[in-house]
View 1 (cartoon, helix red, strand yellow):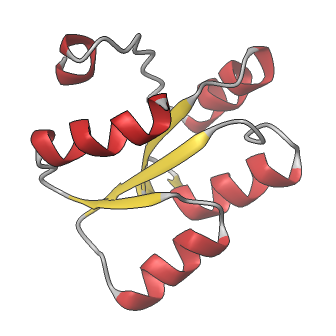
View 2 (view 1 turned 60 degrees about the vertical axis):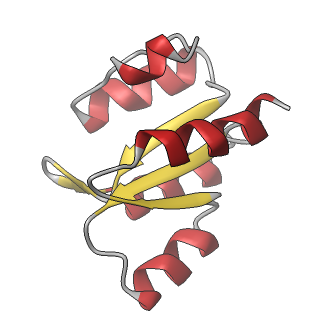
Length: 102
């Protein structure tokens, strides 16, 4: 995985329920999350996680192919630091990750 080559430890959760459980155990430094998930909306999940205090020390990057102005605004309101358009440019992602590492 590209993030591992950049020195990041990666945990993949494909289902919202598994992600909830993981966040309750330990909050990551970075959460890469898609806007559209199986049976869930990424923005709705982020609002839930923020309301529960699960992301207070986590930088959130959202992946989407729907980077409309209203989606970007809603993402910012939900605490998203970066909206990344798919397919993701790995060099650009690496640069943004340096900001998280700092």
